[in-house]
Length: 219
Length: 363
Image (cartoon, rainbow over all chains, first blue to last red; front, top):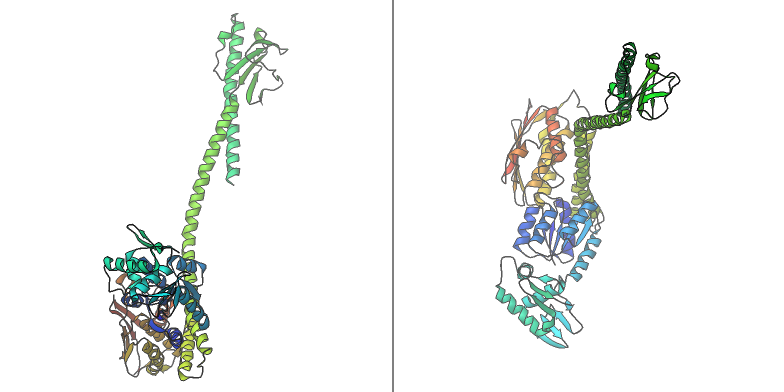
């Protein structure tokens, strides 16, 4: 999993990074909010671990701007702020978890694994969409009634994103920032084609086109 | 208090008012009595018309037995008194006719006395309320004026304590992690423990310095501060390397009359801030010669308006919590104590330079 760690205590940062690296994660450490933003907008991460109290731009502000850009990457706060006010603020901005320092590394690992499962972060997974339909992320196939259909990596990622955010209206912009790298933007027509292909395989019932807004994946 | 004053004012008003009314009524009664006596002397007839009286007053003429001759008053009169109040009305009994025209008593009644009193009550209450509101407003203003600085100080102290406890928490968490690490005995892990413990120790010393500032000794020896600085730089360099920051330094031998701990605190705060606010791959240049210590970083810098405030106790240069607060306050205090001139120069996004000029060093 590709993880960004924002922590300004250099020792603490290194300790956590070492631990996560030992767990086979790819960890990028950053030491202030500005640097965090540079990395987040430059390349894609599967998970962000953010401290709140850091120089330049604080962790809450980083997340606020991120969610403002509709980037829905999972975020865990690692912080010394122990007031319920901060916790409330963090969740209302859109964090996925909140860990108070000091914590055991094992706990961090458990929480990361949980997010991995709920957000299908690592692609070596079967995503069971319904009784009949399974998405195999490692072989890039959709298995429907024991029949297999090959899909492109983007199509698999689009289906995964819709499934993770099921029953929610997702517009094209949101899809672009979350499925594509940030410096490449596909055309709307390309995205329509991808969705058309997915519909062809899994059936048209799953996708509802919401005029002028986007699509909704119904389960 | 206000109620008491109000009541006193009110009752004295009522008394004054009723006395005024009485004298007015006495005057009229005398006038009537005079008319009656004159009428008998000049053998004139008297009728109701001869007695002119205002609307709120009524009059009655009675003989010696108390039987009415002419009267506008319906109720019984107490002839034993000269003046009394009953059911909100005032009565004046005048006996100066002394039986002329068969009249022994002239009675004047004022009916609206009660109404006037209630008007007075209303006025008094209104004034009392006015005074009350005024006193409250003035009192509130004065209290605010006096309490504001105390409150501001309290809030600052509160922020300061919050910040420091937070600042201690992270290195403490790091320390816990490295103590419980599986690779406990590796040199690297021992370094983590050492550096985190040192950071906690520095914060602790800063804290005690702020709260339990002891007086500096009067008889100070010259201390070779350049060696102390070099030793401290080992710690800073280790940390800075983790952020790929290069520390360039050129330190010449220098002695100064300062306590070792204070000098460490002073430089530690300045260099720690420099590391904290310098970006990855940045540079910090430290030079110490001719009694001038310069620490130059390539951090975010501080705007001019904020530059004037950074030495204020617990002031934060950035809106995120932590940092800056006590550090620079300590720098200022130590510099003041040891006759060191401190200057800060900063350019936004380019970096900050601290220049400390030591007075009368010995090389």
